[in-house]
Amino acid sequence: MSKTDHKKTVTAHNEQLHSFEDDLSSKPLDEVKKESSSIIRESSKGRLRWDIYIIIAAIYNTITIPLDIAFNPVLLKSLGISILESFIDLSFFIDLFVNFRTTYISNKTGEEIYDPKLIAKRYIFGR
Image 1 (cartoon, rainbow, N blue to C red):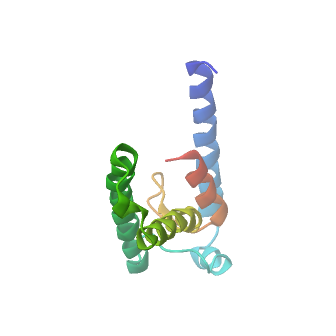
Image 2: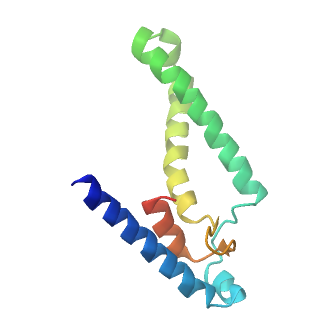
């Protein structure tokens, strides 16, 4: 795919996302919130705590993975560390689903978007 084709594709996806946002803004906010009760607000304390945990887990991985590859230390082979790393891997997997259910602020309107379809589309195609 050439750069021009890629730019056209990205532009088309952005235009499509904005048209979906326009459709959403015509719905009353209370109606959208009722439809999506399992949506996590971007500004919630729980979401902030989750993001901090994911950042700490990512920092842990940025330290331990290179150490394990370069030096293969015995300490990183213990049962406790293996359980911790499995839990962190599971957390990253869960984070995928959390991001699909988290609101975002529209760049176009400045409103918080609650529609699950728009959230998923934005998460898949980027900002």
